[in-house]
Image (cartoon, rainbow, N blue to C red; front, side, top):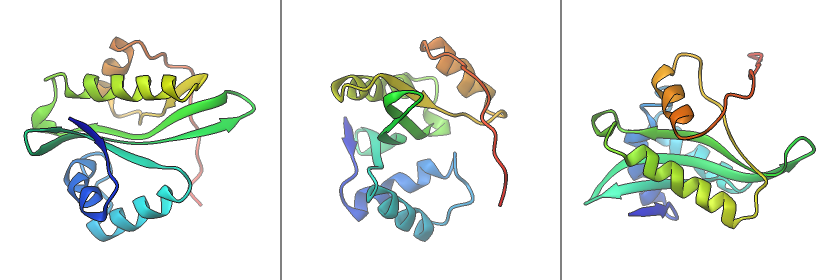
Length: 138
């Protein structure tokens, strides 16, 4: 079952999975940051099998000159012990369907250079590597 976290308890249940992607975050930081981001449209969606959360995605809708109305995935991770079972694909397809329902013109996500398995997954699922993302630590 795929749900979007609405309560602090639901957000907190996503933390153990999200730490596989964002290991620097404490549970307190995670809850506070998700709550803060939710104020500007961020949503935390999760895939639950039986009573276990197996995959989590943080996402938002936005607009810009380059892409028009677009859907952006900030975070997407499947628990290590549940990878290669189709759960990531199921959650990704849900996200893409949701973006279509919201009349988005494009779907975007960034992925760290070190995440080679994730890159293969995204490309296998039809996403294209469209360029480089640059940053500067401030």
